[in-house]
Image (cartoon, rainbow, N blue to C red; front, side, top):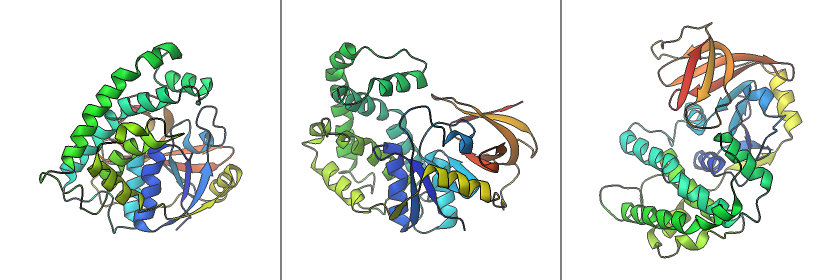
Length: 305
């Protein structure tokens, strides 16, 4: 199998999910550092315009979104699973809540607390992802008490979740849903840790986070963006073997794939493989030659062209 190459940056919370997944499975991987903000000239030829990180590369196969990356890692190394069948309903609810509800107060609080450290370009970039104008820093500062209040309320829920018998979250073998929750709390310690004091007074959260952090990141080695592009150009996409029933989009269809929430950045290509849970499209770029770009169906809109 081709080497696993992760396109990411070190303070990305979503990339932390996948770095922990590498650690859980004991994998070796190559690290390619990409910019936090646009432009991303060494990433776009691989993804066809998808700007979010992390992105996983294996030769000429490109996996977008942490869910799709986890699916591929489970295919390669099934044990321990990131997406086990047992408990998948609870896991889906936990991950969705962590990344669509808990995400916002953690993101706003951390960036607000670090507004003097982060560049103006960072705030412009993140606002543009959501179709907004760049924020007024005085309003960002004035909003901090509200975001802290929302965050403390939700942290209380997590502390309770770690205590009660309704979940084995505190004791089970971690999986992708655990990492989805962890990365939001890990983000509070990011940058200079200015947002970290909000975690105080939650001993169960502290113990659980220490247990997750101890998993580590597997075996990391560095790779340049230029080398990653060269690897893609010299490789051919891997054959797709699937016993899943055919999906709603036949092979050879020209489609556009875009996220449903923000940073739409649609990617266009020809369908190679589609099921109710995933879709793969074929693209070509001068820098890479023919590549396959893989997406999950959850959270993505596929439009026929």
